[in-house]
Image 1: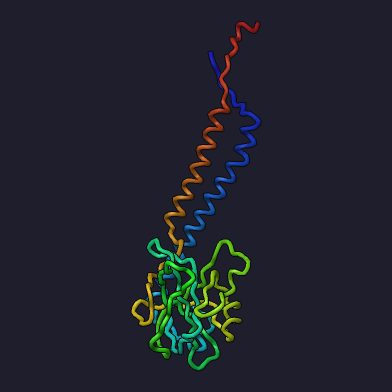
Image 2: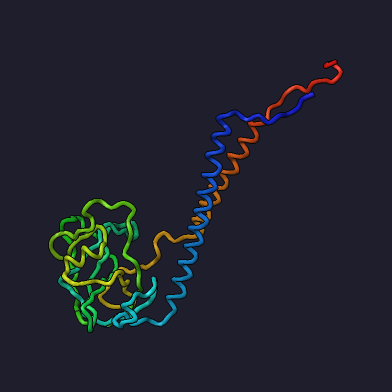
Length: 246
């Protein structure tokens, strides 16, 4: 007659003690990420239906929420535009065109993202960025400056000349180059506005289902690790006959 006893190896105990909390931690983190992304999408949906907020008013300059639609009046600073490098659209490399707009009745400017344009075969030759009408009234959506995971030293400093290519948008560095202050966000130019390029404005890396899927994977790893630990921890041995022990 056989019986089973639970005697896991020491290495297995240490391994499960490290792996199980780690897998569960990663799973919980991905669930939190999914919740944050759902909240972000809900904010986008709610803000996009609101009437445009006048950005060239004191209330607008105080700091509208992310994804808030805004209306503004001012004059494009066409001679001092920036090209944000390493922007991919449809599998092609290009730039986002960031054009400063001096707000009417204010000493402030704001960067208007006029959209994406492809890079030429010769990256040393930057595209021309003509603007037919400098004084404009337009609408757009408030968005943060794009973030990067790893910034090389000096990547925030615009290249010489105009338009000036830049790898990372840092407001203070652009203000030093322009000589006037900027609002701490960009305005994504609406699709229907003139003087724009390719505008396919979608939140980057905002997919709650993807994060939920990653969470399920991590919790599955935890379940598999626990199952293997239990399976290999039980050991089969011979049961002792009470009559033979006398």
